[in-house]
Length: 475
Image 1 (cartoon, helix red, strand yellow):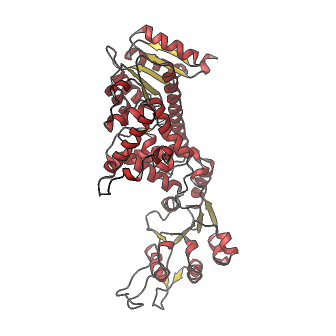
Image 2: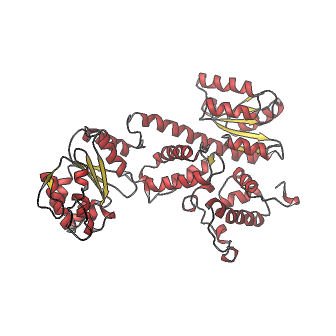
């Protein structure tokens, strides 16, 4: 049925142009309609929503009498954020196209429209629109987990984690979390505390692996003045600081056998002695522990006490690695980008289809922490509201390509301290310039080789002051 085909609204004040484009898109398998201006386009979009036969893409000219394409774009972004928007400009009107990209357009085309370029732009816009819809769906699914505002996840494995957190939080039961580094164990521990009757009491956290063995006992249990060299005053340990609240011990797998024995006693008796003191201190502490290694294997190897393992393995929460819940990546990335946009005071509205595809393909050995670092980097370096493939780290974008190898060490300048954006500018300009020259200034071939879309290439050429030779400016 025609209604099953993706819908495209072609907007142009010239009905001949609009009908011609609509006819081509219909032959390509789209359900194409036309509108002769911005006002008529908004009415058509509203009618499509009301009838349930929604458009996925708007293809609009920029220069139109009355409501022009830029104003239409702004209203569509405000009222219908899931719609992809492709603009058409006259030859040479690159500045208008760049302005449209900054306002949230997916792509732009220059008139006269080339069929092959229109086909590619539509495919790219459809991918972006699908991602927008998916993100919206994930947000609605996430809303069902009310109260988990700091933890993002719609994957069934994360839903199981949420269920366990809700079940165990009201009790005093010891919780053991397992999972690779960067999967969010600290956030889960804080959520258990926040949802517990101990919420108003302290939440204290300690990464056991970050403290030298000689100091870990003092960090946990405190010490009295003169207990050892450098102990110039009494010090409260983390157990005492967390009295009445929750103590989160991360990387418990790194604790020595002697420390494991002391922890076992504290968990059983709820009392301990500070270093250098014979008097016991009793505490009321709920303990949450985490390990980035399988404790069962450590027990089997004799590196972790079996009695301690059974004592802490009351309720176990396994956090899946990010590569096993790829469907959560768009939602996580969008949430992180919104945070960094606020922090940096920048207008950042989302990711291009290519950038999001790269994020979804990457295995993220560093899990959520690595994703957050990648999004922060992209937010800092991006010069448009939409994060592009080139804004991501090379390990994710695939930038370590043969093309990059063409820049020899002889081309490098002596290193001097400078802002990161400035430091990256010249190497990026060299790579793009050499790619253009290698492809005889064919923009489409160059964009394909660089694994970016042609729109991004035009933007970067403008930003980096790369001008084509006079005989190659139409390529």
